[in-house]
Amino acid sequence: MILAGIDCGAKNTRTVIIENGAVIGRGTALTGFHQADAIRKSLQMALDQARIDRCGVTCIAGTGSGAKAISEADVNVNDIRAISAAAFYLLPSARTVIDVGAEESKVARIGPEGSVMDFTVNEKCAAGAGSFIESMARALEEPLDTIGQLALSSVNSVPMNAHCAIFAESEVIGLIHANIGKNDISKAIHDALASRVVSMIRRIGVNSDVIMLGGVACNVGFVEALRRELGLERLYVPEFPEYGAALGAAISAQGETNS
Amino acid sequence: MMINERKPDFWRWEETRWTRDEMNWRDARFITCGIDVGSVSSQAGIMCDGEMFAYASVRTGSNSPDSARDVLRFALEKTAITLEDISYCVGTGYGRVNVPMADRSVTEIACHARGANFIFGPRVRTILDVGGQDIKAIRCDEKGKVLNFLMNDKCAAGTGRGMEVFSDLLSVPIGEVGDRSLDVDEEPPPVSSACVVYAKTEATNLLRRGVKTNDVLAAYCSAMVERMSSLVNRVGLEREFGITGGMAKNRGITMRLARKLGLEPMISRWDTQIAGAAGAALFAYALSLKGQGRPRH
Image (cartoon, rainbow over all chains, first blue to last red; front, top):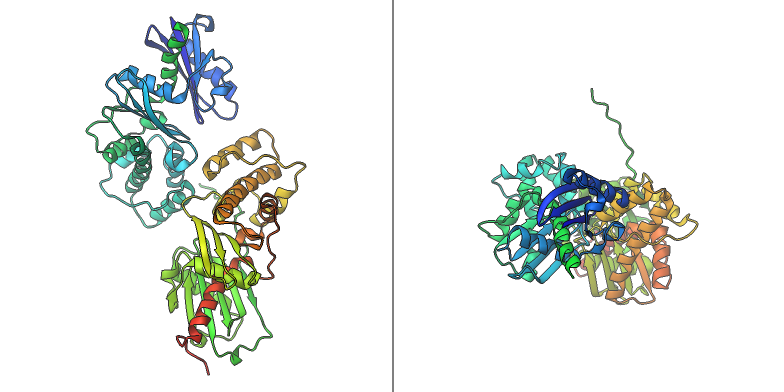
């Protein structure tokens, strides 16, 4: 059976196609304003990669903040359920899943069978999600792709006092003027976001193993900051973490077709 | 070769100064000074025996001591008053501990309540102060003494800084934002996110869809007003309600806030930005009367 999951996020839209539990295609597009276009584009890209056409897909599941715009979807999968299903699929021993996206951060505690025990979400404030790093990268004039790497070369702890991304931008500019190294500033940025995500995680508690999904999981500087802040030996990041929710939606679609 | 095209600073507001020329300051027993160093703007108020003689408002620079010196120099420039003439000086605001000429500092909450009592008169009971980087809702008694307050200083939503970001994004000079936001055919729904970062994304999308700049401004002003009204309602709204800070000059905010709260804010003949400095100068006068200030004769 071939299933597809589409995750329409604030920044990117991703599609994953699975066949009998194995990924056979992935597609991505910038969400932008025209969600429908992005959804179509990412789905087509995944179909092309899987070398199948739309008729070959038994069920399409939609998820993400823009799930309502996915007219192709046969079913809707709740965001938390999607990331938990993906976490259980990717790492059956995972008991906590952290998903940091562009505008939302989510954490779920999962049971031994992959069921959701508890969860919490930040969706109202850019200080607690990937947008924060994006704003800071702009202030620092560093590409978003490399800003995380930059943090790894810093051993200094520069405090960031501002909480709000708007105020933090001015603070970063102040640090640049104070001749603080870009790598130290980058570490400060990632530490700041990590500490806020961790305080959210602590509300529901952390059980090992911990897996991280979402676009921000591609940022090595953030993953390291989060691992350090959580005091973990290891924080699991799968291959293609940014496709986590789409994968989880596809997996959940299976349950939908069975029932 | 790099061509540096300078974009005009839309957020830049006018620095102001006022002097009461007809007042003979030499007769005053105490000349007191209040300096409010905020995160975005700084004000100095000069009072002669508790009467406003001069004030100035400038943009805060990169460090508090220089900003305090600059704003005081600007306020005194057109007068013959020198630093030696000042009996007592109180510093307030975000940078209050870094005001070099201050004899002591007083919290901005206390100064704003005292200053609102001065600029609106003793009837004022609820004050909303919209500052550069925070918003405060204060309840006070007839003497301008603080009874209760609430403050949001963690987040740019609803603050002057948030408005600056929008004026820059939409290339509308900050002084025109209010009137332009009222020049719409129909009041649009507020932008859905209070967060300035997300509101910016939302506004960009609205513009791309062809929504007019004025409508986007209106949608943003409404969202700001929701933040402000919730703070005011939580602290407790009374009929005698005044708005201080730079945002009180933005009709797009004050008119929507009046509609939302269902009452007209009080009108002040004074510049609403000087409330903090006026309150500080009045504290300085009160302390002078208690024997702490240097009488001039």
